[in-house]
Length: 261
Image (cartoon, rainbow, N blue to C red; front, top):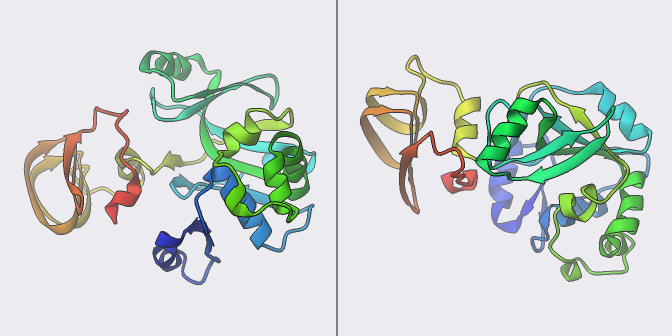
């Protein structure tokens, strides 16, 4: 796991002894984070690396992705949209495993069209590639990051860049694989609600809370005990920054999950 220094102790607590925690000296976007992890590890060019965002949740392996990675592709995983989410990126599929187009955070009207067309997938932000293939694409499309891996440029001098903008949207070696297992972006309150265990009334309760006539809601009590009455389909969060209460209907409003801390 790679994270910022401020999250090191929490990240180590979460993974326990099952994984190494690597801390970036400064945030340089997802492309910088991936390169920092590669340089910090002992990887061979033929090794396959799976990149998974920390706010993603998935439960199934896709064997064809390994095959495509061995053939020299950077594999991006997409999953069929189940509702018109405006906070996700979309992938328009081409023939076979080809990508026709990437669309980032569309309007609600376009998201509705994408969801109904059958031609688009949500971009899960998960990638699979062989190290050698990835480095070759860096040399072509993001040479500063290749220079960092070669020891010719300090990490601090790198631009802040996402892997999507720096490599994925430029490379001709991208393959998209449909992921049909359970997946959810848990960087939103809706995402946390979807993957969490619910009580008999459809509520998810995190922390110490007493509910009376509450249904289909997410209640997060991180500062004190909460008492909630006569609520339906709401997010109620008591965090150190303040109290948030809103309807689940506002799907486009995304609150980063790290504010649960």
